Every structure is written in structure tokens, then in C-alpha cells.
Amino acid sequence: MRIIVAIDSFKGCLTSAEANEAASEGILSAMPEAEVVQVPVSDGGEGFLSAFQGALGGEMVAVSVRDPLMRRITAHYLVNGTTAVIEMAQASGLTLLTDEEHNPMVTTTYGTGQLVVDAVRRGCRKMVVGLGGSATSDCGIGMIRAVIDGLAKGGSWRDVRGLDEVSFTIATDVANPLCGPNGAAHVFAPQKGATQEMVLSLDDRARRFAAVSARHFGFDRQDVPGAGAAGGLGYAFLQYMNADCRSGIDLLLEAVGFDDLLSGASLVVTGEGAADRQTLMGKLPYGILQCAKRQGVPVLLIAGRMADRQLLLDAGFSQVRCINPPALPLDEALKPATAKAHIRQTLSDCQDFL
Image (tube, rainbow, N blue to C red; front, top):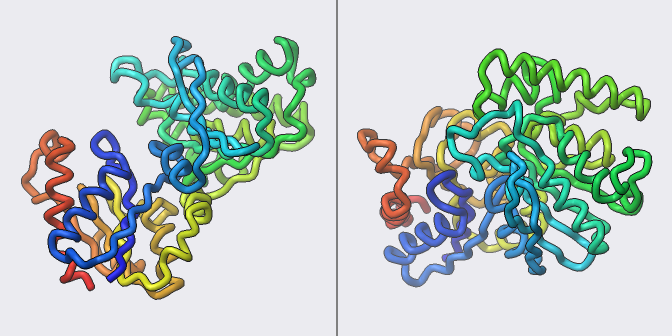
């Protein structure tokens, strides 16, 4: 019996690797003879670096950068040959701030730009940038400023040297444009502390920045799917770096050779902190489902919170299970020990899923 376990992180609770380990323990408690293959996964946010290191190997590089409020911190990126993998949340993520510090009017992606500069100076010629978990809504202006400071000696974008030979791929599960009711400010800024007044101001700022950028380059990529990712950082990479935009989970599954791992598998176990109809909008478990369906392997979906169960089943998940009892208080559900225990218990019934 071969079972693939590839569970996304439970944000604020468990990493992908921790969730996978708990699931594996549950499976093996019921089926000691099973072969369980753990695949750490991420769609571009938390855990992106560790997931890619597990797939590709490589060296973690530590860099002194600025956090979203321009305080000095140490962030990391992954280098494998001439390829760099950057997780923008390492330098510009929401988890770097306290709740009281959430304010997308002032947070910046400057530190992410510093990671790009360091990778260019190190000789990297291909960069994969995971866009997820951002604290920012600055359209990537901070990132661009850091690149100018680092590669143009403080001049202008025209003076930047070293990017012509670098290809960029941004990894995101977000298809939103930069501006408008479905854009970065309206959809995502409230999650980062923005009031309605701030949202309108941020959206106006984004429109003005896109207009100036379009005049400079002679083209406009503000409506390209993914431009609204990470508070508009996706737009900056698309417009200024000529980046390709890919699904983060598709990139990772290619890197780990997921299709090959599925050969001979009896079951795939995937999951996330909260599963509902949004899971079907390109999120990580849905990407895993698409791969498994092509090879006829059933997929069990688990989550800490579950809604739209029938929609998930209709999409192709063989079974969907909420690991927590309905009356469990949220603060208790978010305790790592509780989440691990409930994942183990849920997967100890794995024979019923086959």
C-alpha cells in the first residue's frame, strides 16, 4: 500500500512538514505495512523555500534585509546552481509584524528587492519568487527601489545593470488584476489592516503607478492575471522584470516529480487549514487533485475547518474530512499539539478511505 501525503501548512499552527508527519503517524498506526511518502508543499507562501529545498536540494543563503517597516532582520533564500528561489514573506511577510503594526499604507517590499539584488550579485540567472503571505500593498514599489539602490547605485531604473540576463517566474495562486474591485487593494488589503478609506487610497495609488509605468515602458500589464498578488508585487515583477506567472503548486509538483510519485499509489492525502469553495480556485489541494485525477488516484482532503462539502466532493475529492469536532473553540484548534493529535486521529481511519 503506497500513500502520498502532501498537506499545505495550517497557517499560524502547523508547517506542511509537521502536518505531513502527523498524518503519516496516523496512517502507520493503522497500517504499519503501508509505504507513506511525505511531500512538503507550498503554493508560494509560507514554507515555499523548505518545500523547494526538499525537491531540489541547494543552499540556504542568509541576508540582512529590511522588514515591512524597514527594520533590519535576517531573511533567507535558496540557491541551487544559478537558480534562486525567493519567498517574499521571508522579508515582507505579515507574520513579521504584530497585529498592531498591520498597516499597508506604510509597509514596503524593500526587503524582497534586497533578496533579488543579493541573488543577482551571487550570479543567479533564474529566479522563482513565491508570492504569498505579504504584509504589503505597495505595488512592488519598495522592491523596485531596492533594486535601483543595489544595481543602479541609486540612479534610476534605466541605470539598473544585471537584470537583462535574469529570467523571473512568479509563483502564486492569485489571478487578480492590480486595480479595481477585484484588485490587490479591494480584495487583500483589508486582511492586512486596511480600512475602507485606506483601500480606496491604495487602489488610487496603484492606478497612478501603473499609468506612469505604462508611459515609461509603452505597455501595461496591470490586468495580467497575478498582477494583484502580494499587494501588487506581482505587477512589479510582470511590468518591470518581464516575469512569467505560474501556479505555485504546479511549479512545485513539477520540481518534486509528483507524477512519478503517483505511480502505483493507492491514495493521496492533502489538506489545508480551512477548506471551502475557495479551495477550488487554484489553491494547493486543488492542484494536487488535478494531478492525481489524471492517474486515477483517489484524494482525501482534510482541513481544520470545512465548508461547502458537497462542492468539494463534486470537484473530485474522494472524501473530505474536518479534523476538529464542531464545538471545539478556535483557540484550542489552533494549538499545534491539538491539531497534530486530531490529524493523527483522522488518518488512523485511513483504511476506510481506500
